[in-house]
Length: 581
Image (cartoon, rainbow, N blue to C red; front, side, top):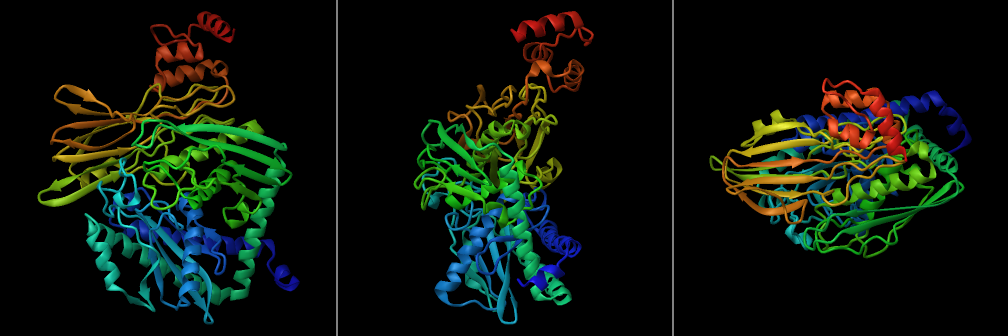
């Protein structure tokens, strides 16, 4: 970039281009959300799009609505495509690559990536990428979340980077392979076409922008965005005290062996650089909660964005970060280790980053989020037609120095929404008999955690049920004196009453007749600060809203209410003094 070019891109021009580029990606997101067949994309927005560097594959631009974990991981996906192009020596205008390899730029097998080059003057100007969660891609369990998988072959079909379109011509052999490996191929076909349409729209919008401003101006803007992101991240790290800060948390089990697994971090701050060292994390496990190195880096990207909100989300923000991810660990697994439940492990990873940075800067402390997506699959046949209902569910986020945690929110890996009950009931033979907040699930604190939820679902047809969840043994943690939240619970009806999984948060091979119910009770978020310092009027209001019981108000907050629900001031002052001792 010449001095003249840099000078031409004044702050106003950069701001305009930033908005225009982000708008392009937002439109791509919207195109897919409005055209996808399966509710996980169309309603929950389990997808994303982005623009990526033509040489390195680094993230250049992301939108406001796509899943952040996908944006970070897609940089590795684009690099995988770039490597294939170099190996084959073959890429042309109109080529579109498709793959879902979780060990080479992916996350798990359900997440299909489509990567398309944007050519200008015979060369790749940038890569455009789309990823969406397809409903079913084979494997032993409908929906892909197989809690008993011991290798990826039991989770579904694995596709390396291949050309879905070659010079603008659809390869029907690839379609035949995909169709033969899904219980619901029509759903996947609709989602794929939604992604293709999003990429086509992105190309048209980018070509128009390049024609308006010129290729060099946009390329210069890309460089400026990354450099500014790096500078802001270095400034944010420099504001932290130098030192090492350690934090560890556990996963319930791997679905095969009922033993907890550790995710351990030592974050070291030295000037304007930070090292995230995960040495001490458990070795790769038998069950499906391993993640690849690329997924670990992507999760760190998401956690840092939550903590340093002013830093723009592109590749520049990772330049001051060094990663130590032990090979062969649960955070650096290689094929064919199963990875279907990657969501559970990255949530624990994000949590330990929150915990470590809270030690370095209490003003950024966040209580642990509920930390599980509770991947629930209900499948069977409805009037001779195969159905697969896959969904994830909400819980509470952690309290912060500024506020209580969000109630019934989605996890910090994403900006996705929880699928509406009306959509799920309309699409599948199920009936929700309960969908509400879970009392006493929030971690106590001066700023309490968010409240979890209770979902009860009745099967209207004989169904197979599988759950891959977490937080059944170790609750979401509190910070700065805040308390832990309630743990995850799952039950189903039998002739003898209710049962729960032997593995606490994971089960498969559960066959239910029509008319039986399952109930999921999700965790809340961890609290922030001493609960005894929470204003008594706020505790009273929590009781009135049903977030906190009268017993919890007294036990956790030292607030005593009389039979009319009013605060007994004298008794409360006495109880708080007693607790303070």
